[in-house]
View: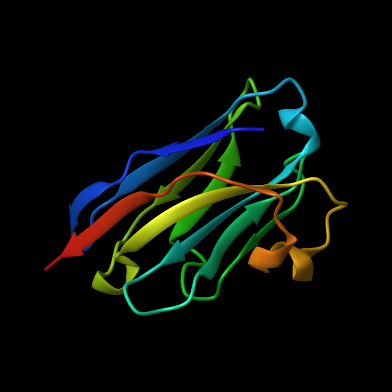
Length: 126
């Protein structure tokens, strides 16, 4: 699976952005998907994850109720709708794919994921 993240950019505080992660490969629907982010000088942190069926989702406390993860109708794209953006949301955002069975706790760990996209920069300014 190859992943291509896009949609990052510059946003104002309180604004919105939608990130996309396009995947190649016919078995994309077999993967759970996650979004992570990494700010300068900080470790990569979990943002959101969605199960292969889209029946289950998980969010970091810091983004819960502001961000929404979803799978496209064709299911080869995963989205991260980011609303009410804050300066602390500034980071490089990465999408990732996991072949294992869904487990919410494991879905929050970068080590769980088998494939990673290249990252897209999100900058929130006041």
